[in-house]
Amino acid sequence: MRKLTPEEELEVLNECIEHKRCERLARQYWNLIYRTVEKTFIYKSMPLIKEELEEVQQDVFVRLFDDNCRRLRQYRPDGGRNLAGWIILIANRTALNHLRGRDPHGIISHKYLTVFEELKEKPDSRREMERIEARQSLLKLLNAVGKLPPLEQEVFNAHFFDGLDLPDIAKNMGKEIGNIYTIKSRAIKHLKNLTAN
Image (cartoon, rainbow, N blue to C red):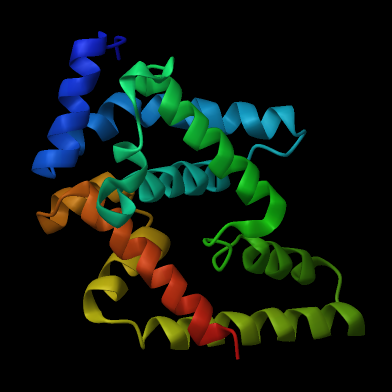
């Protein structure tokens, strides 16, 4: 996508903040945020797992749209940085926080699937215990998903179990993409609380 002029950036920003229409902003910065997250992972010598990069990318959008677009409202055009630069800064910080282990989306990871695949190959008592623990964790998670409010459950299942990305879910449900990011974020926070015990 082509780079926006400063006037166009302000127009896209205003459309999102004032009129709650954030699709244009999401489309414009979708790839930029993904590349920024990817570069942060490379800089920190972390493996590039597509699903994890997409999760962090989506977390950036949650942070941008959450709390009535608070982080977008903090942007100041006269602060020496264009809107793309501001979004890059937020994406970089989000990726770094994720890498420090403070990612709120850590509830769903590929560790369950990886553990199951590894355990199929070499059965021994230690691995058997790991397999049992992984299965119990997965069952606990599935049980917790059933306790989510219906809308959160629908978004969570569509994204994590059906593999749909959030813009597609928004389109299918006839909702704004910002709403879907917020619903997903709330679902994950509820799941963290439900599975903490």
